[in-house]
Image (cartoon, rainbow, N blue to C red):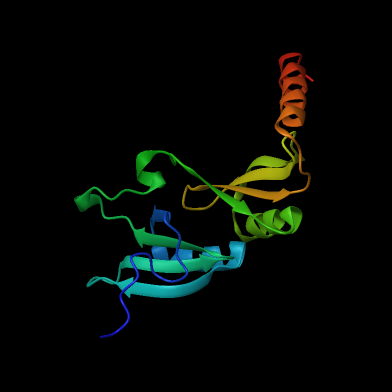
Length: 160
């Protein structure tokens, strides 16, 4: 009797995001350039569209496919925006952020050291998906985060 099949495949986590995009082949190349993704699997459909692809970014897997309007599978471009952000922790936020922008991502929020201890910024990729790029730079207690957060929001309310 052989080894039992694992319910969660090797190298995967319990939750794996799947992005729906227009032109998945172009998206795969963008994610390789912008985020250093490694292509693991590409399953083309009968018309050349991508039915399923698997990419690895760091230690995480990301699935993606082309949109199929006739089946109700729509990209952010068809929906008028994304309903989710992908949070990408990296070793060097500035380098990763600039790499994504150089590859064609649009800055949604410039990089900033945030009150909760992350260097943090947001970009939108050419396919409408929002990516948060962050590096954890400081370990803080919940109390410290609370005090800093209070000061941050107070300063925002005063236009600072």
